[in-house]
Image (cartoon, rainbow, N blue to C red):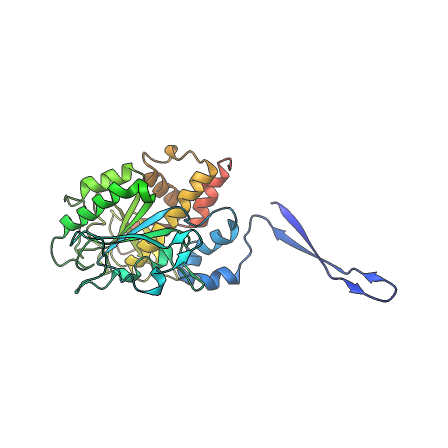
Length: 338
């Protein structure tokens, strides 16, 4: 294990001499030193710490840009663009770079009753406001009102597909790399449900865009929500924030379990983490094709490979809780940085 010697010199000046008392501290180079500053800034300190997000910020500070240059799309039931969190301007431009409403087909993503959920859905992944930081806090955001209400009361696949098509059409323009697909139908699906969004999801995966959705919050153990169950969408479940105990909705088609009290938060945490892992892959020139057919599939494989296995007694299934630091370390350890 590499060790660094840090010399701290205190100068005391006397009339006839300079005394140099020396204190030697040993720091392990491969063990990030805990930072109260980073922990205090985290949007969700407990969950971020357990996911290795804070440790990643610390270890790769000055190496990674934390989502800068990438854009996240938040697809939900509308976002109040007047809140100060989304009016932020960063040194390189506005936090929110575009908006769209695929329900009414206009550029205003504002919620319309009964919509209520979308304003805060991207805070955990993207917030950069008054010292509070989401996972990929330097990213850009696009807000899309894609459904009338997050917990679907009817079939809204058509407007969801229209929103996904907007992303496909604008992916290169905004460098869209991740989508938080937030809606849920709150049903128990054991296998994919074929809908008009499937073709769009497949295209987005081919474009290299990470798309994931929450499994649901009812404690179901025999199926998960749509669109999380869709064939080209990653399904995100949860473990309890303070322990590797699987809870909320899960089944064999759940891809990852994230520390959170709700799977919408789980999904928000992982989409931000995916943006950071992508940046690490690009920065390190990691040969990701050995991990998966597409970049999103490769990133999922890395999250699983480097994560912690969690056994769920209620279902007898084994899930993976990812650790961002382990995933980023993995790609840097096998690559030559640029």
